[in-house]
Image (cartoon, rainbow, N blue to C red):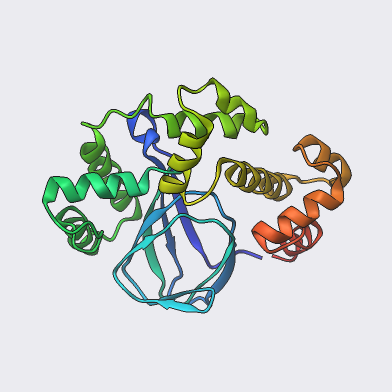
Length: 257
């Protein structure tokens, strides 16, 4: 059965990819029923422009035109009603708050996204554009421009995130020019979590993405070993804790859609 959700996504290339992992659009036509989806945590933050009906995340109604999504530590349930019309920017782990601080210094405001002249200008322009592709192009060019003067290629948090996404070994962070305590402090400040929790979160996310993409029957015990869990029970506990769903239930929900 075809989903009523119209979803488009672009993964930026080049320098912007250091800051932004994705620019996306989600719409529910007026002649379709709303949908409910599970958002698996990715340790990133984001900014959402709501150009349509209010949406619900968990039990909270979001109706502001501009919403900053703080660092995602656990899964959330989102309901998009008929007439939902969203477009958003998903930042790389640890980069959303950093950009917010830089914009605040540049504009001389108190630091909220809602009060940013840059963000408010984008909101006005997005409201006048009907094409999803043109909206995504606008955000791509705007954020590429606003981040072009910032050099964070050698930022220790960026390097730590890269290392932890490539391996389950937290001890790889010893290669960075910072002490363990400094790295912990940077992660808590920028990501609101420890490096170890970040690694756990990304591993759970990787497992669920693998289950989502897998067309054939998957042996969960083998999957657990492949992704660095001690056994299937360990993987099940971690998925339940961080994503709010077990691998078996996730597979069943995938087949029911």
